Amino acid sequence: MLSLKDSLAVLRKTNALLDGHFVLSSGLHSSKYIQCAKLLSYPHLSNKICISLSKKN
Image 1 (cartoon, helix red, strand yellow):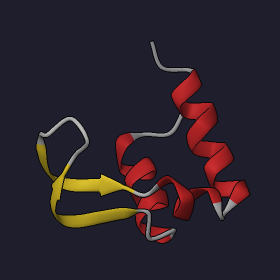
Image 2 (cartoon, rainbow, N blue to C red; image 1 turned 90 degrees about the vertical axis):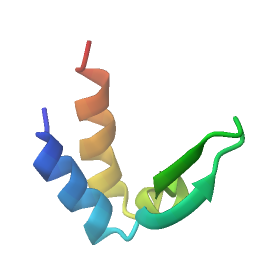
Image 3 (cartoon, rainbow, N blue to C red; image 1 turned 180 degrees about the vertical axis):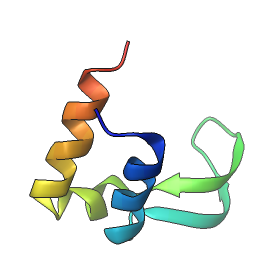
Image 4 (cartoon, rainbow, N blue to C red; image 1 turned 30 degrees about the vertical axis):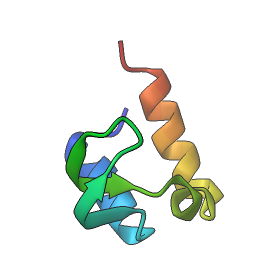
């Protein structure tokens, strides 16, 4: 399972983790956003994230 630090490193490496001001579809605001399409364009890295997420309770 990837640590938080390793997961963030993967998201930054793939440019999937965006910083700024985002209004989510729920109406909530966030300073971070994960653009899944960017992550999924790197299958070997997205596989690591997906496996790690599936192992979390």
